Image (cartoon, rainbow, N blue to C red; front, top):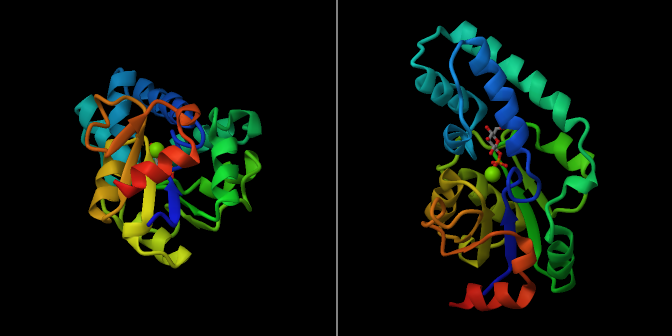
Length: 217
Ligand code: B16
Ligand code: MG
Protein backbone atom coordinates (compact mmCIF):
# COMPACT_ATOMS: atom_id res chain seq x y z
CA UNK A 1 0.00 0.00 0.00
CA UNK A 2 1.31 3.43 -0.96
CA UNK A 3 2.11 5.55 2.10
CA UNK A 4 5.06 7.77 1.18
CA UNK A 5 7.00 9.29 -1.69
CA UNK A 6 10.72 10.01 -1.41
CA UNK A 7 12.13 12.54 -3.85
CA UNK A 8 15.69 12.95 -4.98
CA UNK A 9 16.44 16.68 -5.17
CA UNK A 10 18.87 17.50 -8.00
CA UNK A 11 17.25 16.59 -11.31
CA UNK A 12 13.85 15.75 -9.79
CA UNK A 13 12.61 18.78 -7.84
CA UNK A 14 15.06 21.26 -9.42
CA UNK A 15 17.60 21.15 -12.24
CA UNK A 16 20.77 21.85 -10.30
CA UNK A 17 22.64 19.29 -12.46
CA UNK A 18 23.31 22.14 -14.89
CA UNK A 19 25.08 24.14 -12.13
CA UNK A 20 27.08 21.09 -11.00
CA UNK A 21 28.11 20.64 -14.64
CA UNK A 22 29.29 24.24 -15.11
CA UNK A 23 31.22 24.16 -11.84
CA UNK A 24 32.95 20.82 -12.59
CA UNK A 25 33.71 21.92 -16.17
CA UNK A 26 35.52 24.92 -14.74
CA UNK A 27 37.73 22.61 -12.63
CA UNK A 28 38.40 20.39 -15.68
CA UNK A 29 39.39 23.47 -17.70
CA UNK A 30 41.85 24.49 -14.98
CA UNK A 31 43.34 20.99 -15.16
CA UNK A 32 43.51 21.22 -18.98
CA UNK A 33 41.02 18.64 -20.15
CA UNK A 34 37.50 18.72 -21.56
CA UNK A 35 34.48 17.55 -19.61
CA UNK A 36 31.37 16.91 -21.73
CA UNK A 37 27.65 16.78 -20.91
CA UNK A 38 27.78 13.07 -21.70
CA UNK A 39 30.51 12.62 -19.03
CA UNK A 40 28.33 14.61 -16.60
CA UNK A 41 25.74 11.79 -16.56
CA UNK A 42 28.22 9.76 -14.50
CA UNK A 43 28.28 12.42 -11.78
CA UNK A 44 24.52 12.56 -11.23
CA UNK A 45 23.44 11.32 -7.82
CA UNK A 46 26.93 10.47 -6.58
CA UNK A 47 28.72 12.30 -3.75
CA UNK A 48 30.98 15.34 -4.21
CA UNK A 49 34.26 13.45 -3.61
CA UNK A 50 33.19 10.50 -5.76
CA UNK A 51 32.27 13.03 -8.49
CA UNK A 52 35.79 14.46 -8.30
CA UNK A 53 37.32 10.96 -8.55
CA UNK A 54 35.25 10.28 -11.69
CA UNK A 55 36.26 13.67 -13.13
CA UNK A 56 39.95 12.95 -12.52
CA UNK A 57 39.57 9.49 -14.05
CA UNK A 58 38.11 11.14 -17.19
CA UNK A 59 41.08 13.53 -17.28
CA UNK A 60 43.53 10.69 -16.61
CA UNK A 61 44.93 12.43 -13.52
CA UNK A 62 46.08 11.15 -10.15
CA UNK A 63 46.25 13.82 -7.43
CA UNK A 64 47.03 13.74 -3.73
CA UNK A 65 44.31 13.98 -1.08
CA UNK A 66 45.11 17.56 -0.11
CA UNK A 67 44.83 18.81 -3.71
CA UNK A 68 41.59 16.86 -4.15
CA UNK A 69 40.02 18.44 -1.06
CA UNK A 70 40.98 21.90 -2.23
CA UNK A 71 39.56 21.26 -5.76
CA UNK A 72 36.28 19.91 -4.33
CA UNK A 73 36.07 22.96 -2.10
CA UNK A 74 36.69 25.31 -5.01
CA UNK A 75 34.03 23.57 -7.11
CA UNK A 76 31.55 23.80 -4.26
CA UNK A 77 32.14 27.55 -3.76
CA UNK A 78 31.51 28.11 -7.46
CA UNK A 79 28.40 25.86 -7.36
CA UNK A 80 27.02 27.63 -4.28
CA UNK A 81 27.40 31.00 -6.05
CA UNK A 82 24.84 29.70 -8.61
CA UNK A 83 22.38 28.06 -6.21
CA UNK A 84 22.35 31.12 -3.96
CA UNK A 85 20.55 32.91 -6.78
CA UNK A 86 17.86 30.24 -7.23
CA UNK A 87 14.18 31.06 -6.70
CA UNK A 88 10.94 29.06 -6.64
CA UNK A 89 10.70 29.72 -10.40
CA UNK A 90 13.31 26.95 -10.78
CA UNK A 91 11.11 24.22 -9.31
CA UNK A 92 10.58 21.82 -12.23
CA UNK A 93 7.22 21.92 -14.05
CA UNK A 94 4.41 19.86 -12.52
CA UNK A 95 6.22 19.38 -9.18
CA UNK A 96 4.22 21.87 -7.03
CA UNK A 97 0.85 20.52 -8.24
CA UNK A 98 1.92 16.90 -7.65
CA UNK A 99 3.23 17.67 -4.14
CA UNK A 100 -0.08 19.33 -3.29
CA UNK A 101 -2.02 16.31 -4.55
CA UNK A 102 0.08 14.05 -2.32
CA UNK A 103 -0.66 16.24 0.73
CA UNK A 104 -4.39 16.24 -0.07
CA UNK A 105 -4.29 12.44 -0.18
CA UNK A 106 -2.27 12.14 3.07
CA UNK A 107 0.79 10.64 1.40
CA UNK A 108 3.93 11.47 3.39
CA UNK A 109 6.85 13.08 1.58
CA UNK A 110 10.61 13.10 2.07
CA UNK A 111 13.74 14.28 0.31
CA UNK A 112 16.50 11.71 -0.21
CA UNK A 113 19.47 13.54 -1.68
CA UNK A 114 23.24 13.06 -1.78
CA UNK A 115 23.74 16.83 -1.70
CA UNK A 116 25.21 18.58 1.33
CA UNK A 117 23.69 21.77 -0.08
CA UNK A 118 20.13 20.44 0.28
CA UNK A 119 19.11 22.87 3.10
CA UNK A 120 20.26 25.90 1.08
CA UNK A 121 18.50 24.72 -2.11
CA UNK A 122 15.22 23.98 -0.28
CA UNK A 123 15.38 27.36 1.42
CA UNK A 124 16.06 29.20 -1.87
CA UNK A 125 13.13 27.54 -3.67
CA UNK A 126 10.74 28.04 -0.74
CA UNK A 127 10.28 24.35 0.17
CA UNK A 128 12.34 24.28 3.38
CA UNK A 129 9.35 23.33 5.56
CA UNK A 130 7.34 21.41 3.01
CA UNK A 131 8.64 17.85 3.38
CA UNK A 132 7.89 15.60 6.37
CA UNK A 133 11.51 14.39 6.37
CA UNK A 134 14.76 15.51 4.74
CA UNK A 135 17.71 13.11 4.44
CA UNK A 136 20.73 14.59 2.67
CA UNK A 137 24.49 14.19 2.28
CA UNK A 138 25.00 15.67 5.76
CA UNK A 139 22.94 12.87 7.37
CA UNK A 140 23.72 9.81 5.25
CA UNK A 141 27.23 8.41 5.49
CA UNK A 142 27.03 6.05 2.51
CA UNK A 143 26.54 7.43 -0.98
CA UNK A 144 24.00 6.13 -3.54
CA UNK A 145 23.86 3.39 -4.91
CA UNK A 146 23.91 2.39 -1.24
CA UNK A 147 20.25 2.39 -0.05
CA UNK A 148 21.03 4.22 3.23
CA UNK A 149 19.63 7.63 2.23
CA UNK A 150 16.24 6.15 1.26
CA UNK A 151 16.08 3.73 4.23
CA UNK A 152 16.74 6.65 6.60
CA UNK A 153 13.96 8.57 4.81
CA UNK A 154 11.48 5.71 5.29
CA UNK A 155 12.36 5.20 8.95
CA UNK A 156 12.18 8.97 9.60
CA UNK A 157 8.66 8.92 8.16
CA UNK A 158 7.77 5.76 10.12
CA UNK A 159 6.87 3.90 6.91
CA UNK A 160 8.08 0.48 5.69
CA UNK A 161 10.32 0.57 2.59
CA UNK A 162 7.77 -1.52 0.68
CA UNK A 163 5.21 1.29 1.08
CA UNK A 164 7.48 3.95 -0.44
CA UNK A 165 7.88 5.14 -4.02
CA UNK A 166 11.15 6.88 -4.94
CA UNK A 167 11.52 9.47 -7.71
CA UNK A 168 15.06 9.57 -9.14
CA UNK A 169 16.90 11.02 -12.14
CA UNK A 170 20.18 9.10 -11.76
CA UNK A 171 21.20 5.50 -12.33
CA UNK A 172 22.99 5.37 -8.95
CA UNK A 173 19.80 6.64 -7.25
CA UNK A 174 17.60 4.06 -8.97
CA UNK A 175 19.96 1.30 -7.87
CA UNK A 176 19.78 2.71 -4.31
CA UNK A 177 15.96 2.71 -4.35
CA UNK A 178 15.81 -0.87 -5.66
CA UNK A 179 18.35 -1.99 -3.04
CA UNK A 180 16.11 -0.37 -0.39
CA UNK A 181 13.20 -2.55 -1.58
CA UNK A 182 11.22 0.43 -2.86
CA UNK A 183 9.35 1.07 -6.09
CA UNK A 184 11.16 3.54 -8.29
CA UNK A 185 10.00 6.06 -10.89
CA UNK A 186 12.81 7.35 -13.11
CA UNK A 187 12.56 11.00 -14.14
CA UNK A 188 14.35 11.61 -17.44
CA UNK A 189 15.63 9.51 -20.31
CA UNK A 190 14.27 5.89 -20.38
CA UNK A 191 17.41 4.69 -22.16
CA UNK A 192 19.55 5.79 -19.21
CA UNK A 193 17.01 5.01 -16.48
CA UNK A 194 15.92 1.60 -17.80
CA UNK A 195 16.36 -0.07 -14.38
CA UNK A 196 13.45 1.94 -12.89
CA UNK A 197 9.97 0.35 -12.68
CA UNK A 198 8.56 3.23 -14.71
CA UNK A 199 10.09 6.31 -16.37
CA UNK A 200 8.45 9.70 -16.86
CA UNK A 201 9.97 12.66 -18.68
CA UNK A 202 8.63 15.11 -16.08
CA UNK A 203 5.93 15.64 -13.46
CA UNK A 204 3.35 16.99 -15.91
CA UNK A 205 2.98 13.30 -16.79
CA UNK A 206 2.32 12.25 -13.20
CA UNK A 207 -0.72 12.56 -10.95
CA UNK A 208 -2.02 10.81 -7.85
CA UNK A 209 -4.21 8.31 -9.75
CA UNK A 210 -1.34 7.23 -11.99
CA UNK A 211 0.93 6.87 -8.97
CA UNK A 212 -1.66 4.82 -7.09
CA UNK A 213 -2.19 2.43 -10.01
CA UNK A 214 1.59 2.10 -10.44
CA UNK A 215 2.17 1.42 -6.74
CA UNK A 216 -0.44 -1.35 -6.68
CA UNK A 217 1.04 -3.34 -9.58
P1 B16 B 1 26.93 18.44 -3.16
P2 B16 B 1 20.89 14.35 -5.63
C1 B16 B 1 23.50 14.92 -5.89
O1 B16 B 1 22.19 15.31 -5.54
C2 B16 B 1 23.85 15.35 -7.30
O2 B16 B 1 23.03 14.67 -8.25
C3 B16 B 1 25.29 15.02 -7.57
O3 B16 B 1 25.65 15.42 -8.88
C4 B16 B 1 26.17 15.73 -6.53
O4 B16 B 1 27.53 15.38 -6.71
C5 B16 B 1 25.71 15.30 -5.13
O5 B16 B 1 24.35 15.61 -4.96
C6 B16 B 1 26.51 15.99 -4.04
O6 B16 B 1 26.20 17.35 -4.05
O7 B16 B 1 28.26 18.69 -3.77
O8 B16 B 1 25.99 19.63 -3.24
O9 B16 B 1 27.02 17.89 -1.76
O10 B16 B 1 20.69 14.08 -7.08
O11 B16 B 1 21.20 13.11 -4.79
O12 B16 B 1 19.81 15.22 -5.04
MG1 MG C 1 19.46 13.56 -8.76
